[in-house]
Image (tube, rainbow, N blue to C red; front, side, top):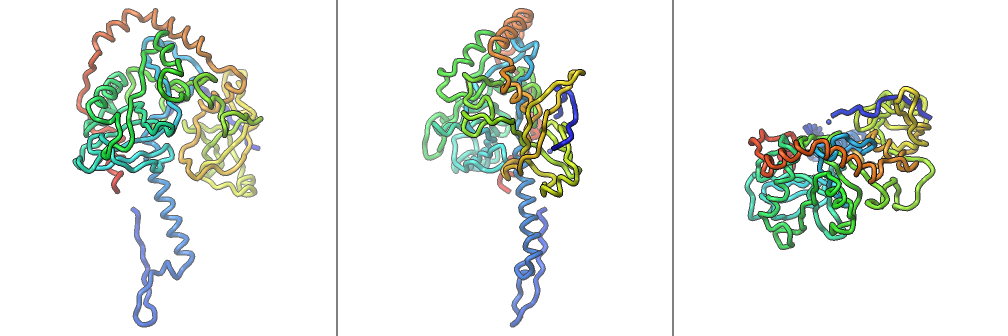
Length: 399
């Protein structure tokens, strides 16, 4: 068992190859790679390669903006937020550059390497003018649903508002033949519907049978935030039993285990960390040695749930080491996910009625300001970006 530590709910935080060949002379003057004759050297070489590949995967995994889970409803939800129906599928980063398109899963591994009609996305477009999209791949209809746009034809908009980026998602995708299949476009792309988080917009997004895809909850994004790499409190995911088959984390969407499970990061000193960088527990040196727990790696933990102490701070109850995590995982779960999953098991998450009430209250109290912003920003302006943090991913894609 671990020793748990308390912390606040709303703490938010915003991650050469060196060749060393040792050739030795053999009989007849032949030269051999020393690593081939030395098992230890070969093992070191493999470990070095694995470390490099993991570092590379983690780099790409950190090029996405990850939502926190809605455990509390923002007070300005009805006036300053969008709501999007979230497609069920594989969250991925899509980059087109120099005549090819590559999609990478949240683990940083490649999902598809293909031709697309995105700028610079096929053999007829080899110019270094990349596109970077935040998508969910829906295997049932072989479609990439676009959540956000960070760069289009070399024009970076990471530092632009959500209002502008989402405007570009719809306008730019309509300019290219990305909605149909062809030799130059192996997968269809479609923008995810977007609504202002008014009562009317919430109702439209919540209608799970009207979007053409299986839903996996709702996504709320602040209208004025930039595209921030990593975890963002201005992007929130919410689920209930109507909008998601996986409101509670399960392997099959049906059976719910007695104890909640979570993937967390174990540091060298035994600290157990969440995606926010919060310490949620600790492992003694003795336990790490006995269980052969690898440091600086992902591991699965089980817990009874999350409880609130007298001073209002939350901490895990009964946090216990379970097993080594999946080798594909490079990022741990967020603390907000742990809290939401604990609430979901007790049916205490914010419900759609509570969210609608908050939308109505904040929309009414800010109605005049909201109308003036809407008329002034129907086509938001933006200054040319300076590259954006995620464009480094484009430069690495072909290496």
